[in-house]
Length: 408
Ligand code: AMP
Ligand code: MG
Image (tube, rainbow, N blue to C red; front, side, top):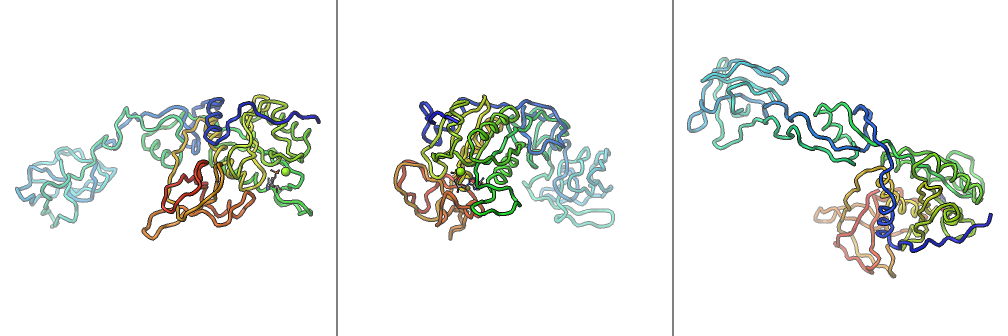
């Protein structure tokens, strides 16, 4: 198969430029659908959500204690009051509290009419019929007011928010039954290489098991995508091209690993040029330099390097950004953490280092670059907490200096 050379026209060179290019070409491609909340964990909101009730929905007791009227308290905050009954959570009382009366009340119970203060249990001495209370002068009334957390009409979640357990809890409390979410992004995953074997297959000499696909599948699922397994294809240009053409009609994004570098059997960049357009390739970063991006038959394709740590780094730094862009999910804020030790490098490229979170002597969370790094290191993938970015223009980062850290 005769292939053109792989030279993107005016390609971005840095990671930041590559992300800008992705953002300038691609936007959200996933349509919206309205579904019961229970099936929406991990989905991304297509529309923001506005509260239609107040939270709390009623004025409720914030403590276990006695419900009283402040007018009954003397100048020291004391009173001896007749106990008229108990008010438990879920069992509201509609009887107005009269002068000289108190009610034993529990956390979460609705405040009855007439009551403007709860005296916490520990400041009360109970007899069979009465309770001696002592309110702290200037103390809190220990009542959670209706709407004090959320007011009806308030926007509580923005479009693009992923629905995790916290968001599901919030929406459930707001009695939201259906939400408008985006369908899951379908991402085709393909591994390329003659040496690759499926998990569990018998080892052949010179072969290795494909460990990139399970890694990428896991991360894609964490991002809320539907991973479509396209298997392993050998280093044969015609077969790789056919697999890509077939996938392009069936998924929103293709992610490959292997065969993206400059060797004679690395067909991906040339295949992308021959069938679509190659937007960038060979970014100014290490590891991850061979990562290429473009489209095949109008389906975006991210070609990751085969080396496991390089694939992990390129996916974490570029793949996640691309997935969020196409899926309509908001980008996460960058994290900066102090370095646990000084590091140096030569040259003007972005160095991506495996890093582990650690605590400094002062108890501050720091990030420690691994002593042993390498684009092929599986140990780094398995034991790092994430990636430390050592910027292009820097030659040394000093201990304690805040550095960008991207968690795995
Ligand atoms: P390549 O990017 O195809 O030149 O591959 C670079 C290195 O990564 C080679 O040592 C490959 O054997 C290895 N490699 C490629 N694909 C995978 C994969 N899916 N899982 C694990 N290692 C891989
Ligand atoms: Mg290869």
